[in-house]
Amino acid sequence: MTLSLTDAQNLLNEHHLLVEYHQNECNFDNVTYDSRKVEKNTLFFCKGNFKEEYLTSAIEKGASGYVAEHKYETSKDVSYLIVSDVQKAMALLGAAFYGYPQNDLFIIGITGTKGKTTSAYLAKGILDKANNGKTALFSTVDRTIGPKPEDTFKSNLTTPESLDLFHDMRAAVDNGMTHLVMEVSSQAYKKNRVYGLHYNIGIFLNISPDHVGENEHSTFEDYLFCKEQILANSDYCILNADSDHFNEIYYAAKSDVEDQQLFTFTHQAQEVLPDGNLIDIKIENVEETLVDSRFKLKALTPKAQKLSLENEYTITIPGDYNEGNATSVIIASLLASATADDAIKGLAKVKVAGRMEMVQTKNHGLVYIDYAHNYASLHALLEFLRAQRKVERLIVVVGSTGNKGVSRREGFGKALSQGADIAILTSDDPGFEDPMKIAKEIDQHIDHNKVQVEFELDREKAIEKAIKMATTSDVVVLAGKGEDKYQKINGVNTPYPNDLNVAKKIVEGLEDEE
Image (cartoon, rainbow, N blue to C red; front, side, top):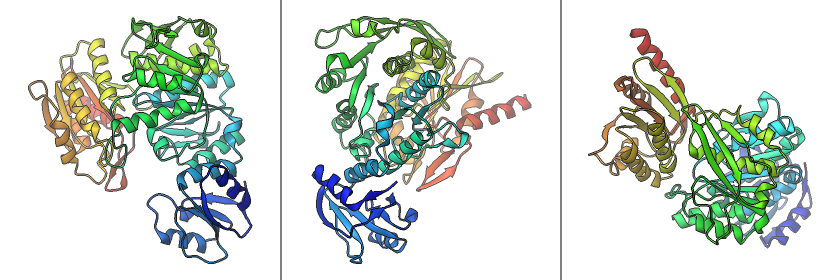
């Protein structure tokens, strides 16, 4: 891969980003924003919480040019491109450096407050069936860029920084991938990580208050606006008509795509859209258990009928909200030339790590592990469990992340008040905040006339306490972390066995004693 300074300058000029430049004509053989990864002939990006010493280090290691929003004093031999927005510039130049790999991939982008990861894995399951395993995946949990085991690795962000995004897209194309399914976070638009990126299909699953607070979105309106940007950057849009704020989402989509490129679906009896048109697809539940869901799809409009999706489908991640997730990616996959048979067979095999996993016990009920990490997902999970099983008590172990998503704390309190009998408040990636402070903020929003509240900030001890207090007819819910193997404490990823392994070990110990 290579990028000339002249090409970089012309591209930035085309997008009205270039403010000033100093040119010593050269070709860049590497691009990075991390001074530790600089080598000879690198174009270095000064972004984020930048310190001038990073640029000094980069030049010492061989950087021959830099992109920044401010000019720095450097050697005259170093070229620079001063821009009005370094994040936008980085996305544009990253795509160019890696040869626009997005043009060689059919890309499905997925956004929503809950369900992005589950939907991404379901989509990959269908498309892998259709294209013989040539589907790349960029998710909150993992990134998959090829067919080999080493081509799948843990993600550090839901949507990577733009240079990492295009680097991994290039690797996926070089590894023979033909499709890409990617989660698109609101922060990806807020911070221009996906600036200039276009999707063949954009899925908008739902929206509820989340990610509002320090270092994230200042208001819910800003959060919704950033989410809606996927609609303006997609050829086809797929919308969940059961989402909150659907009117705003629907009319935003209608302003961006033609009616024939807009698909909607619902679980509800209501089949009419805000403008009087019919919803395209109706979901009808057939049977739901703790381990799977069977549902049928009914096409209500001619464009939906052309997809030939009227079949019965089974997913191993139950719940009506997961039927909605599956429906969104069935539509997307059929638009991507998969068949209904691919969807039936592909969905039946999909498992998502950390989503709705169970540990059965002899004397302490059922332990349920799920990544539910906001009001919408925790509320839906607790409602589902009560509907599926005669539950004496729902005992919930939950915490909330530090330094972000502050609105989740009130949401957890509300969800616990609506669905839990006992809440054990604990730690979940407290970051630089005091975990007790976070727990007490959740507690402020819990109705103590309905919910017994206990505090245990050591997460493993909290899980042990919950399982020990449970009886045969209780359900213990471990919410928030899923199979995450780290706790983020004071800026450090501290190893943690993950909720599933902790629960299994505790249950094994109890049953050995009993």
